[in-house]
Amino acid sequence: MTLPWTRGRWALLAALSRGRYLRLALMLLAAAATVLFGFLFPQVVRVTVDSVIGAEPPPPLAARFLLWLGGPAALRTRLWVLALAAAAPALAGAGANLVRRYCTQEHAEYVAKRLRDTLYGHIQELPYAWHVKIQTGDIIQRCTSDVDMVKTFLSNQMGEMVRTVFLAVAAVALMLSMDPFMTLVSVSLLPVIFLFSWRFSLRMSKQFLACDEAEGALQAVAQENLTGVRVVRAFGRERFEIDRFEEKNQTWARLVTRLGGAQGNFWGIGDGITGVQIVLVTLAGVLRCLEGQLSVGTFITFYAYVNMLVWPVRNLARLLTELSKTGVSLDRLRAILAETPETDGPDDGTPEIRGEIVFDHVTFSYGDRPPVLRDISFALRPGRTLAILGATGSGKSSLVHLLCRLYDLPDGGGRITVDGHDIRTIRRKWLRRHVGLVLQEPFLFSRTLRENIGAARPDADLETVRAKARVAAVHDAIERFGAGYATVVGERGVTLSGGQRQRVAIARMLMQDPPIMIFDDSLSAVDAETDERIRRALRAHTAHAATILISHRLSTLREADQILVLRDGRVEELGTHDELLARRGVYRRLHDLQNRAVSDCRESAAPGETDGGRSEIERGGPDERTRGI
Image (cartoon, rainbow, N blue to C red):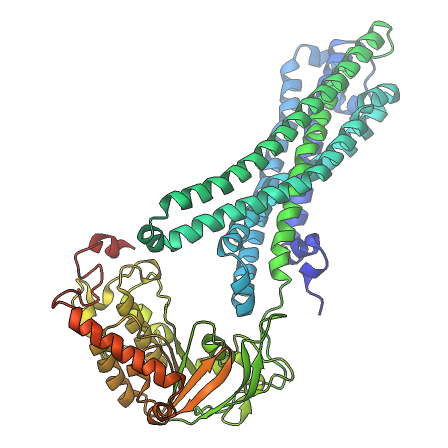
């Protein structure tokens, strides 16, 4: 099936408007009625001046109207009747305009809501690789500013464009029926205005796109700075970040100023052409009235019609400009919607998962770059623990990403099986539901601690949440907070210490009770004593699961059933702690280095030098801020 956004920007709008076609039809009828009633007022003035006050014979339709009101002679003494007759279409036109505006506003809000929902739902399904390469600020800018641009066009400019089209058609038809020569004079410069507006809108498209991209880059810098505020403070990078923001802001301001200057030139030239058009109509009308070729009432009507027509056509430039900007925004939104979401094959299944993992000659690279994993093979059974050790860039996280199907193995890259099933034949969501993952830098939501721990099971009772927190050795720390499990943590868990964030993330994963558990250096921020206490509790709690431990702390890895040492994406060593020590290879050298470093630290450390990894909440830091974040 062809998706609507692949057929063009306006096909996307048509698809989003589905279900509101009757409302759009009502808007069109209301726009036509607004124009019709607007043109009736000058006609009443024309008949009054020419046929009631003056002696000109009225047009056939107007003659019947005058007879119905009592005839021209009687109306000369009751001009208030004609005033009421002129007011009636004005009131009716106001009512029709109200309906038109309501329909356009309601339609715009409906489309904007559907567009936001569609974007958000689509982004949730996009692969991890897409999220890695795109800037968060740019996504937010597209989902806010660009959606608002579409909504503004639909609520304001679209209705005006429809009204302008009806206005031009009706005005030319009525003016031709009154005086063909004056009609030619009245519309002589309108094609010039239209072509000038059209060319301007085409020129502005690139400038609007550049402004949008510059604004997205500016928002990306601001979002990155606010997210990494602790790093900025810790390294004293305030001046650097200010300069970086000012550079992006200057670029954006320069582009917007250039755009404003171009728009100013356009409006000035357009005003001049419009003024010339009105002057031509005035001169031609006055001369023809003096020569007796045109009645005063008809001249007044022509002047009114030209004023009614020339300004909407003049405004067409702005409408075309807004149309161009909306087109740019729609293209930027379509670029997101055109990204291919994660999909499962028709034959992908949901087998029972117990946790038996096999990596069979796995080789993997990111795109065209050199492989980050080369010929990796190992096996892990349920109830057993595999520890992975390796330098930065050795492929540890890539191995985890493959197991969770955040990336898929290419053809010829080996196989990864879970309980004998190739993971490429297992539905992604089903697989991830059975794989618990705790990262070194876990993400916590700006919600209560209970909601963060119970994210995998929102319906779990408080006692279950507390039980998992005890296993993760974070229960006592939570109880020391003023609101306990109802404490609202800051954005990304900023008001907790690093160790507390990791332990909350461990408790959250334990709530999932998965048959496969992965700890990606997730105890790096806790002290050795707490590390041992957590591992002791986890051994009893995860006895049924296949566990993968990634760590640089050998005391964490030594009790694993197998230890895998990675180097440059290859298996350097594989065996138990004692076996690897006996080989006197990489693992033995790291073991000796860490033991020597620990001995040196113990000799030089004075008692009471650490705060025990306490959070800002415990240290009396931003407690008030925590309650409201």
